[in-house]
Length: 241
Image (tube, rainbow, N blue to C red):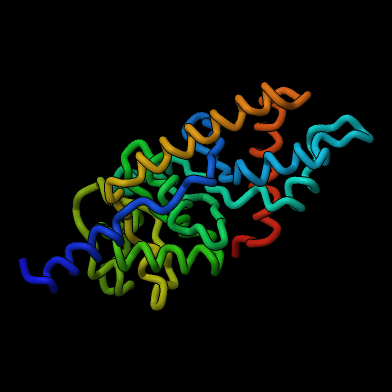
């Protein structure tokens, strides 16, 4: 086979491969139709315990978020939920952050979506998230959303271009879309994401087992602290706009 063809095939596979996850784990909580996931580093969490910084010896509290922050334990989080419109059967990303691990964040989100399809939160999206969705627009299979109000097609250029009579694509759309058209699409899984999620869940299970065997606090309490701290920390650092 021609070397150029081999290189093209290799680059295509590389772009669709799962990112490294050896030192990443994910704690997932399901609340009705909502999925909350916090990504963290097991090795960093291990160092917290080995240093004696956790739990807080002075208060007896396992909610020692300062120690989690000091040792760079929490790496990101994502929250998705089912919208109240068809939206191409997609789940909506309500919030997310993860400096340097954007592919992991989106991989976890796509794997958690029962349909394997995601849409942005068109009503409130940070500049950080806009960059992430622009990247998804460039690489993933996608379908346009149709505004559920079905305004006259001459009143909105995006609606005029993408309006359909079917109901399955009806959704709320981002009105000021001259530079942000990518927010008005649903995006499909590439196939590698479930494997990433399985690996990270396995890492989390192993970490919780290590805590139960080596620490003097229940792993369930530590897991709860991780789940709470992730969104709390990143929502302050990367507020939605």
